[in-house]
Length: 339
Image (cartoon, rainbow, N blue to C red; front, top):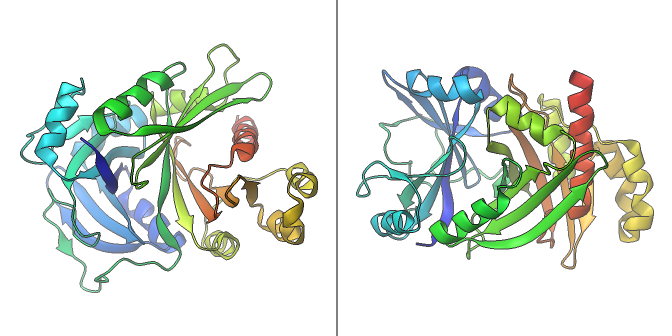
C-alpha cells in the first residue's frame, strides 16, 4: 500500500505554449517529449528529478471550465500497482481505470493520483505516445532545481482531519507536523503528511470557518473548490536563483520590509545575511535542525490560483512555521491590492 515518490505532475492549461515558455524560459525546465492527439496535446518537461506534463485539448476542457489552469494529476510510484490499487479500494478510496493498467485514485477536488510502477527517473511516463525531442538530455537536468520539496493543497475548512486519515489509510502517509496561524480576522489550519521515504510530502491547508473569509477562501472560490495551491521546488542556493528567475520574468510576492526589521532579534546567527535577504526579498526561518530559506511566486495564471515556491534547506526539515504568517499576509496583501 505504501507509495514512494511523485512520478510526475500533470497540469491542464488553455495555453500550452505560454505555460511551456514560463517553465522553460523563466524557470529553466527542458522540454523532453511531445504527444499530440485528437483529445489532448501534451509536453513533458523536466528539471532535476521533477517531471511536469503540460496538457491542453478537449480532454482538459471540463477541468479548465471548473478550475482554470491547474494541477489535475499527481502520479505516485509504488512497488506493486495492482496491490496498491486494491488496497486503496479496501481503504474506501475511489479508483478509476483498470487496476492492471495505470489506475487513478481520486484524491481531493478534481485531482487524481495515477499509480505507477517504480522506474528510473529518466523513464518517460507511461500511457502516452511520446515523441522525444531530438536534443533532449539523457539524464536529469540539475542546473537549478533539484527536486520537488512538497506540494501544498488547499482544502475546504474543517476537512483536514478527513484528508489526513485518507492519505494515511490509502497510501501509508503519516502526519509530520501541524500549525494554526491566526492573523486577526482570518486564520488557517495546516497539517503536513509525508510518506516513509520522504519522497512525497503534502502540506494540507484550510481556512478556519469560524473566522472571516481570507485568501484561502478566495482560492477555493477562484479554483472552484479544493486544489493544488503551490508546488515547492528545492534549490541549492536560493539567492542567485531568485535573481536569475526574476531576470527571466518570474514575478515573486512582495515581502514587507518590517519582516526583515525583526530578523536580527529573531535569528541573530543570520545577521551577516539579512541585508542580502532583504534585497532579494527572501524569507528565512530556523528549526532545531537548521535554516530554511524560501520565496513564493505570484500566480502566472488568469484565475490567480496555482503558484510556485523556491526553497533552500540548510539542514532544516520543517516548513518555515514562522514564515507561514508572512506568506499569508503577503498573499492577502496581493489579493486586496488586485480587488
